[in-house]
Length: 136
Image (tube, rainbow, N blue to C red; front, side, top):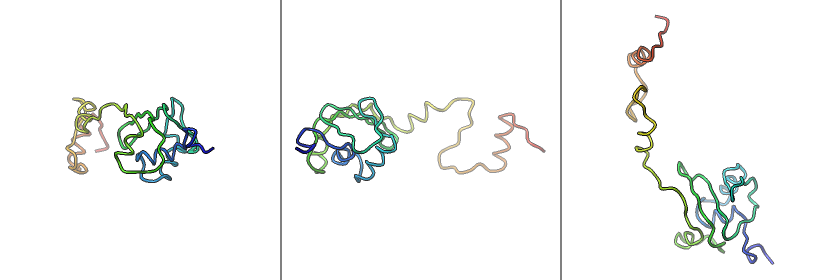
């Protein structure tokens, strides 16, 4: 009797089947790096068996994913088939602009994105604003 017949599958294989990682080796590296949390415990091996009802937490880019395994799956199929393998419980995604607005405060100098490094005059003005006085 194989693991799939008993309703269990390797976690790296399931993450690859569910299309969270492009390759199985990337899923395996995420497991070995301790980036996957299974039912509240950090996974350190790619060979850990998962089954229906297990909860996984991991980062996908800048967003946290919380998924519950609904089915084990038998292959890496098309996206609709992969989405049927899990139920997503992730918090709603927020736009980067909204996230950055929360971080900004009034007493911090803010530069526009993409405006590059400050010029020497701008750096000296920032130093004066902060109260940092250099050897002049």
